[in-house]
Length: 133
Image (cartoon, rainbow, N blue to C red; front, side, top):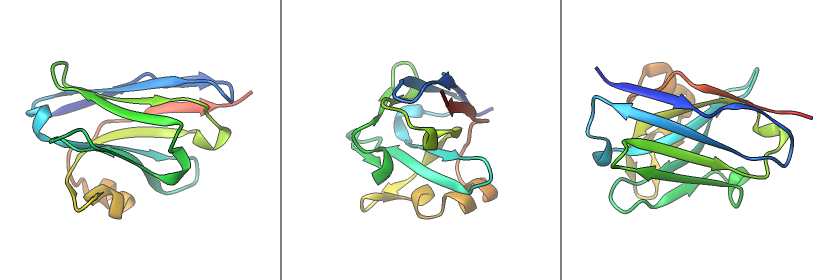
């Protein structure tokens, strides 16, 4: 059984930091490109970041560049998202998912809502991040 389990979410003040983790089992983690997406209340799914399985090349949505860092530890089968300088607009449920990166973009990046709706790839259940004073 494939499982992706996110953790590390919580309540943080603006300007604070959180590190999300996504622990993966049931697949050969090192062989998969991986992605983080988020869904804010009342909004659609937004692609946040991806990381390539071959050389760990990271990709980010413009709104998080310079603040978020995606990384992976293949020995621990774990994906991370370090989030610094958090803003209220970062409040959302964050999901990790397996993905496929080609030509500098990922399948999920092209249509994150459809990807989640159609279950393209493997997905976790999400972790809530709330940025509020």
